Image (cartoon, rainbow, N blue to C red; front, side):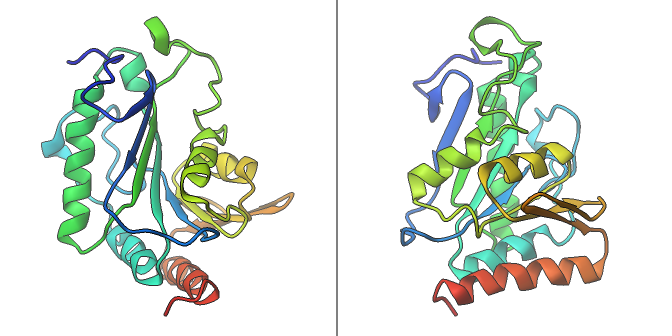
Length: 219
């Protein structure tokens, strides 16, 4: 395990915050984005992942990301990684696991443009012990940080996740809708939660992403 506070080898904006820009695509200011949780949304959740060989993509997720790629919409992973704060793994483990996830997506012609990961947690140790850190979902910090760096239109952006904390982070960031894996539909103040449970839900998500590209001037 590497020291979780190491910053020289990894793209750490601060000890508990990974911010990595991937690829060289330049997006016009004002684009909406597709935000995705990682564990349980992109890959099958293994608890506190630290073994790249265990990574398996969830069915159809590559098609969701590829739709955003074709529409010219930035794809951004926003993931809580409290296992680092708890000492179960380090940033080196995260780098290896995340690299494997990105490789699996690339093999299916699906590409991510930015990855943000928050390791802060109240049950951690050292500088990563922070209760309710603004970057940890359900707080919106990672989404806001991505918007600042890429000039995103958050109100038109979408989020996909497998936990209510993902939906709450989207709501607090000013998004208008999100898709909850294996969840239930809900309408909150200014934010709509849509379920992703079956083929009809999947088709609806693809249509919503494609529509963002049309509005943004992409075909």
